[in-house]
Amino acid sequence: ETGVTQSPTHLIKTRGQQVTLRCSSQSGHNTVSWYQQALGQGPQFIFQYYREEENGRGNFPPRFSGLQFPNYSSELNVNALELDDSALYLCASSRSRAGGYEQYFGPGTRLTVT
Amino acid sequence: KNEVEQSPQNLTAQEGEFITINCSYSVGISALHWLQQHPGGGIVSLFMLSSGKKKHGRLIATINIQEKHSSLHITASHPRDSAVYICAVRSRYSGGGADGLTFGKGTHLIIQP
Image 1 (cartoon, each protein chain N blue to C red):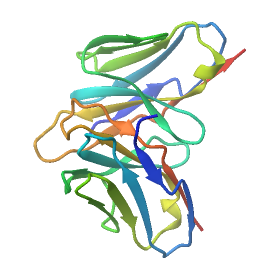
Image 2 (image 1 turned 30 degrees about the vertical axis):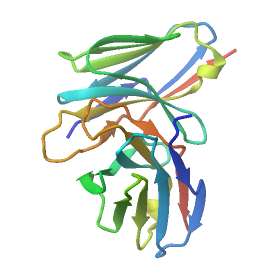
Image 3 (image 1 turned 60 degrees about the horizontal axis):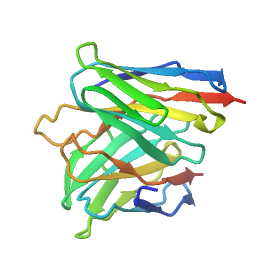
């Protein structure tokens, strides 16, 4: 196990609703990245938080937003849910934002939008 | 933006066989990751490398920076190695903010007893 936890493990929401997913990073890690993995696809980068600031963003609309807290845990918020948002959402923490640090993944939250 | 291609997409082999999974990428990187994903979703990091070769137990990962290519090898394969193996790269940091990892689509490996 990596020490990265995510909650909830599974979630079912209705189109148009809002959802908040949570991630606790590994001890000593100040960087959290969020990824979306649709069925049968590789994960896609949503955004990264470093020391409570957004440090980079992939090709996702503004209704995907996030927060990082002083203890470096993080939230992913998705507004106005669409059917295509159904996916496995993964967070990964690392010791720093630089490329040379290993990322440790959480078990993921499986979101189903009906 | 980096593009990551993996081959093969699917691989079924007999227990004990030597397995090779390939990964190619399109632009310069600061690191390449090999990851393992079991049914249910959790991802485990196997290797992170930026040059040369790394070995851990029966797993070996190599990278050729000039050819923009990496391979993951499994020796003496076992049914418990059955999983999806994913290659992911981090592009060289441009100073403009992280762009995260770019992932391949994964290789579905089944090892039959």
